[in-house]
Amino acid sequence: MKRAVREMPLYPSEAEIARELLGPNRAGEWRGLAALLERKGLPTVDPLFGGRYWPAVKAYLDRRAGLVNVAVPSVPDGEENWSCLNEGSRRQA
Image (cartoon, rainbow, N blue to C red; front, side, top):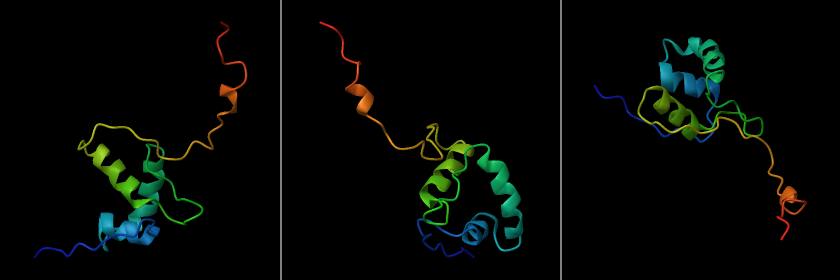
């Protein structure tokens, strides 16, 4: 029998991710797996939203399974600073 697929929230809880990825019988393994996979690029829990961004988690798992060959950052690297473009970066004519 085919399992009904429900739509995941953008920032699901760790329990929701565990059930979705591992099923109810193995959900308790998620904490250890997540710690291991974070070192390899699994998106971390966003402190503002309290969950992992689900589309990024799915993209990570697709790349890990060899379905996609594109690397994307797993965490934001900080706020952009464009002021350096106005200071001394112009070529002298």
